[in-house]
Length: 329
Image (cartoon, rainbow, N blue to C red; front, top):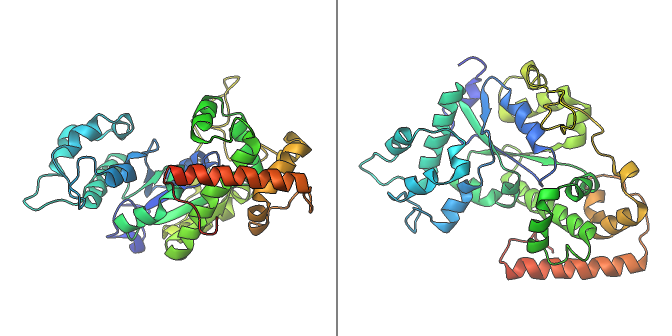
């Protein structure tokens, strides 16, 4: 197929996963990569891929497909968004030998790629940043693109995330007391888990993209992404919006299909000093590690003590729910 390099011939799908803390700009990155002539990124976030395997829904204890899997998937609204015909899905299970879940999902992604007329198929589900190790176990050659954005800008976005406020309140007991510090921990949790797992995968399978660099230097970042993915660069990546941009008043950047645009959020102008201090008291160390400049070199002792209390409560809640925590937390 046109645009396919020799390096990618014979590789297995899923070819790549786009991951990152939610609100990092992963939808933008999905659209950029999906515009490549050789790459198709699933239209909607899947969510079911690791969940089915972990919960063994329609699988044997050792991960092989059972007849119950197909109706479970066909009852999943997110799976239906892939547009895979039930007959084609059934054919994936027609084998005299047991079919492992990893092989079955590879077949699903292959079918999606065939429909899009593209050989390489990936997935954009931000929360998979917490499950890199499991996904790598299932698909050892899959590549991971981790999008990282300044957590203070993500915090601003989370505060405007109206339809998610109640879910945050249910998931994180500290949210009602201090949403800023909780959002800082939530960002740090995702980024730390992704980076720690990424280091074990190595540079051939794991690649970090800074959102700020993507929007300010799209050509250079897209060319670097293509080198990592082993495909030739295509100008279609930075022209993903052409023919789709909508000028209807009130639409946000995502729904308006705007081109790559910098300055969508700016914590320096939109975040009050008190909120910045609370955020940096919790996640200032990660900001420094990522070379995002802190607003202040010093944090008041009262802010540090408050941050420690929120951190302890966040960790206790995660342990109670048996959620994976980064090393060193």
